[in-house]
Image (tube, rainbow over all chains, first blue to last red; front, top):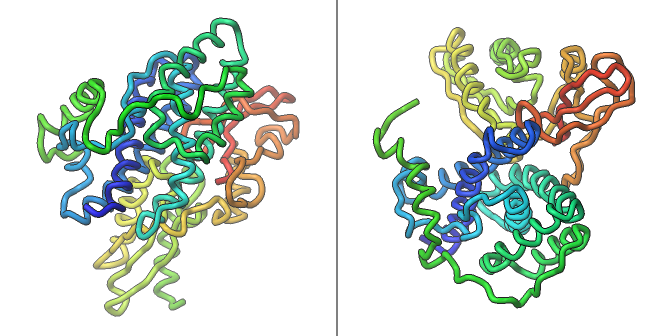
Length: 223
Length: 161
């Protein structure tokens, strides 16, 4: 695949894997409104991933389903942050902020056929970013308990920013963290290695096992 | 526009949005082009989806095909992503229909980058302008949940997008 396809696959896989994680909140979110919100965001991300996987599949003559359901973990290119287990609500919302801030940088740069997906996604993503930022501020600048949990989430997520944390990304997220009254971590702190060479956390295999099981048990099934 | 293409548009006027049946696909502004060929026996319709992951998209394509097959031998339904759909493409009369259906229509036109999704100007139940947001997301991707502080009723707001 061309370098452009590689970077498109990173976006497609990032959207799909995060969509799956968010869908795990269905019926478990703290409030019904938040259940609906995370479901809607997951749906947007799923649609964005499908749009890109259709384009990538067309290049090599495979379907979006083959790419989604029949690739092994080593073949996925999502940023590691997207595959981490949901943790608590603070972790989920801070991750959504970080990933949405990355996508806000990425969508406007896509070219060719991907522009059709990006034009729509950039508006949807802006709304996700706003939603995540409002929760990060509410929890960070909330009770002692929620403040501590946001600090814990930041500590857990910060080492995974390296695959997409540009200066522009930092400029997007730092004001939110400041408003959330959590200490800003160093931009040059240590960060995890990239998934670009096929290395993943142990969590992706379990996620894919669940996501792919139906399609693998019934290859070619239509519903 | 030939008389026959008018026929295709007339058929499309009868295809409702599956989630908001008070609106047709034409009201929504998702029908971007209608072209006839083979002396009016074949028709090709271009649709632009509302939201990336909206589950209604595939149902709409199916419904459009089924409706047109009553009037044409060959029906081709194609999806066009760019330019992306915007609520600006919704008919003004559709906004009145939404209001009558109990959904506050999108307020104002979209400017990019999209920084906010607007706010309902009045409650679709009692007409009061005393409204507040309950949740940014609602029962479908295109809606948010609001409530009126005059009549106390909750209602959907069709987000500016």
